[in-house]
Length: 176
Image (cartoon, rainbow, N blue to C red; front, top):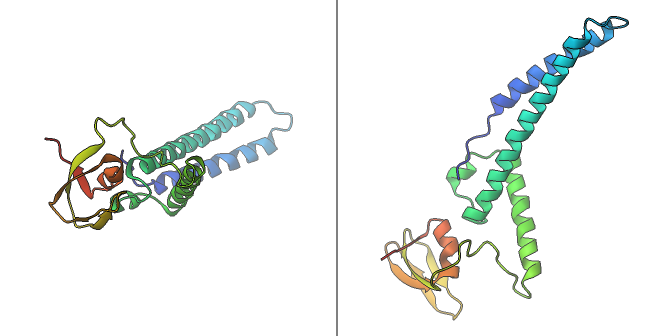
């Protein structure tokens, strides 16, 4: 999933155009007292305003859907390359979505909660072989075993414990 940089110049052009069309409509509306020849141009410009509004809303909605999908794909920590393409408002929305999702997951799984972002595809096996792509430090699994994740080391780990690290680019699934 890719996310391009927010096109601020796109919005600036639309705001200027919309303001200009709105002012023209206001001027023509004031002149229409009893004159019907200006009404078609007023309606046309009003349709242009509504079209511009729909285009901007569709563009922003598409970006929000992509940002929401990024949360499910990469987890709660986005890579720097993706955060670079997001504006401050989008980062704020992402953080609010992340908090809402975390609150929901804590509320549905009993005492520990249930991580619904794990196992996006049904697993073929419960354990997988993974290779560490970069130094990550110590990693503890449920039985208390602590594993040192060093670059190029390979491990046989529970799938659900390492899926998040695979999405973050720390581990890769070794398919033999």
